[in-house]
Amino acid sequence: GLRAEKTQLIFARAENLDVDCGRLLRETLAQFGGRGGGQPTLAQGGLPDGGQLEAALEAAIERLRAS
Image (tube, rainbow, N blue to C red):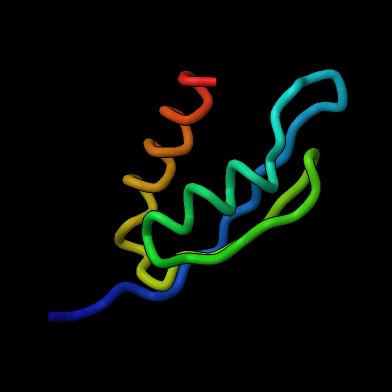
């Protein structure tokens, strides 16, 4: 089958929020074969298959809700 192009993601937060964007992005992308990381306030990474973007975003939202 065809594979979608690599997709880049950026997670960012306001200084007053208690979310580690680097950890959130790294752990979420690892589930989908991607890589990423950064600082608590700003992180970037990529998915090897852009077709997984929606599922990855949903997984990140679930991680936020669980924290």
